[in-house]
Length: 251
Ligand code: PEP
Image (cartoon, rainbow, N blue to C red):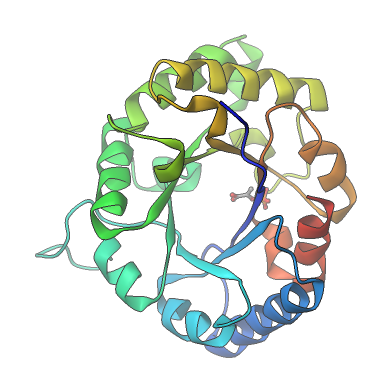
């Protein structure tokens, strides 16, 4: 099974941005992507739910994809404050991040909940980006690969294929800290993730595996060159168009 030739560079804006900020950022990214004319990589931005519709409109025709940062597992109903995958799709999203460590920590999301959200994404016609990653304590206890395996087996729904799944490896201790694993550590984690995916997905070699955690313009080339890395999930550095585009360029 051939590996995918198209890396994905995804920006997670988190809970940041007014409409004016978001539109300026989206326009900056869209202009850069249009100018670069890339056909060999995909660029995705995931704004807060309040901005998805406006951002999708602003980037239309540029090739930039738009995603949500989370979704509820149900399509509709009495879930005050939540947003369904169908709503994201309706607003112009094509992707949705599920199981980000900030959701797992802030909202107590379990692997089973993440799996249900990934299934909801499929139901709505969205591509789920399933996030997994170890904490510093787990890494220091030598449990990294075991934790990744457990999260993967619990979070990836049955019936997943490379056309329906992106996985993001995000060490919790590397998110927003400026710290990153070494390139061999990233490669080892990704190799293990791909091996575990081999038991879950028929075409595991083609599943896109993103690395996330303090990726910036200056370290992107090195991190993206690690074995089994097919792109990046970018937090802080996705809030500046120039920095985000530098990461996309490095892909
Ligand atoms: C993230 O939150 O997904 C992330 C990778 O954040 P940062 O790039 O800021 O570490």
